[in-house]
Image (cartoon, rainbow, N blue to C red):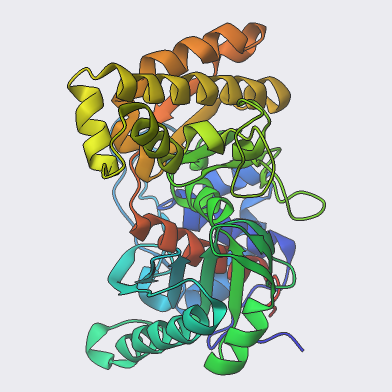
Length: 402
């Protein structure tokens, strides 16, 4: 039987879910705006929100309308009652898993980060990592249990891992970076922690966070492309973050657009990651400069100083990334691409080449797609894991079914 959160939501109908989602992602928002945006009657909105107010998840505090406030004004001289989520009504834990460490956060119902914990790892084996996730989660649970923090009850724990993740069953099917295959992570963690656990692909988690609490709130479609040790892509299309029929989608880093002699961490040849990831850029710079002692910071410094070998590595990365972006945009047509991840710190080194390659290969009006740089830290990845829990909580999805 699916686990239930410590504080269930009083949502009995799809209309209630839709109303809360609007308040959560677009609030403070008056009832009249919710009615206009959802097609529900104002009476239906009021009926849906009443139990949420009574249970302490939502509040309506009247504010005087301002001149020229448009549709948020219900009538001349009448106050509006915007609906706002009470962020501290519940708490969430999010954990981002990397080969070298864990990043854990606690958030409120709006994915606002309350506290952050980092935990280094000596290796990436499941025998090492899973007990450390349990240890970190328990530390964060103890933090939430401290009444002095004013945090609401824990509703669930989100864990984000790179690679092919079966979110429906909580299984990491294949994570080349971690060296994991067929790891039943959600079941193992649930048994240890006694709380609902959502396990998902890390880039998809970041996309969920952007969908509900970032650029996706006002976008009809967008993509999140992450550049770092790997190259990932999350897609938001037709009103939903794309999961793929088999749990795999948006694997931009594994498009075969690089030279065929280069072997990827996934075992295949010619993947975008073999040229465009930060690890690939560093390896190429070490090889061409004959300086095996270089770290990434050193490679970046050389490129900024004009070293032709280092510049060539970044130029090649920009060319392949731009081509991959064009292929993705040509196929699915998002209005916006957010370029994020730890690798964006080096964005200036390949931006021009990347944009030129994108323009050269984008077909017709697809070239009008906006490319936006958005800096992210590993804390944001962990926040994305928490955002997936919030979404499942509101929608009543496993393992947080009401």
